[in-house]
Image (tube, rainbow, N blue to C red):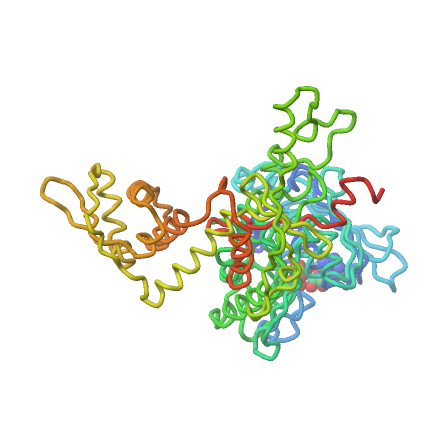
Length: 605
Ligand code: ADP
Ligand code: MG
């Protein structure tokens, strides 16, 4: 009878273990959390083969006595559950009392542990949940656990593994998340013999972020300021400049009451706070720490994934969005040039690596002669003289100042701007405080026009203008389909159409701003665009129409600007809600700091 029961228990354990321990990353997380619970000041983790071959976690925490260690690898033992009320709180990282047993059941485990008081340490070897040996050994204070051949006895689970690369990446992600929440602990993480993290004790999150995310990311992160410190939800952490944005949310770290969690609502709220500053579909880089009354959250919705369920998630979402939103509003978000080729790309959208080939290099490759526009051959006579003159024509803007005084709140970097000239008929060059700014005239103009159309449309003030002679269009079948999906949007904005029996489509009226500012030909191009433009699927039809109108109404690249137009654009930035991103999320302005210039010219070396 007892024997049957024992067998049952072991089978059951293996199945149950699979629920808690899905993959190496869960194992590492559970073990590190135990180390943290044991008061470790230093935690070292190491994996090989994505953690399937080997996981090693070593800490300098309190350690365990022999009997306690033996108990710990049994199911449902824990030293942490004083009474049931504890379940409500989040005092310790784990409180289910089953992680160690579950891991032991599906691997070959060796545990070496020693308490401060004990003279010697204990080594326990377990295989598939069976204790194989218990020895007295010499050991330093703390606990070291080695896991080999994870899931060797659960083939179904093992087949589920994605291979060393992806599994290892998940492990690293889990370690980074923990390291970001516990900056008073020294974390070291080694993958296949290579140290990928060494984060010594840090007195503030910024320093920890440098160690975990790298200097090149951390330098573009802004401390989150909670505008409402007294409300029930505290929000703190760091949030990245839009230029760091990534195609996924792997660099969006969320913790609740000090524990890393999966909280999709929080991630969405963070993204929402960025609004249109981000390129469509991009995610910001952020370390967001949410603090709420523990009674308001459920942590163990899923035993392995550590999702959280907020009792009042709307409250949390609102607090997060507000905190990050107000942080961004008050922050200086100008895209800055990256110091090295391997650094964050200038392109606001691209993830590091993606756009590496397109990255502008500011440093002439050593040894190569400088080429390009600077070299002018003066031997060629008159023609060359013209070319020379063209080369020095930097179209200076003289005597014009934006005059910010009447504009209310203007960010300080913007106040310091002095337009210097226009180059390539496309960019406006400005000098600011200890920095040079390059502004993309079309991107900025489009953003400003977009905002003004949107504001007018919101107040129902888009005036309509009847066209004297209706514009006749001859749309194809697919254009008609496209038009129908946009028709309501177009009409709400002031367009009016008439379908004639012969298939001709007449435009009878337009928003008057189009009629006033565009030639007949330009209007035709816009209409074609509206008939043909791809539906993006992520924004509403009305939004698409407004963006398209903004694009067609705005100053283009390749257009020579008058000093007045330049000044008008700069003043527009002061009144804009998102002056730094065009409607497609590309940056409108790029800053090259004086320090950066000095570095490029090797003045600082
Ligand atoms: P839980 O963490 O939920 O208590 P575990 O199975 O993860 O359950 O651990 C069981 C017990 O083993 C813990 O309560 C703790 O007493 C002990 N333990 C586990 N890991 C360590 C460690 N690294 N250092 C000290 N004690 C540990
Ligand atoms: Mg635990």
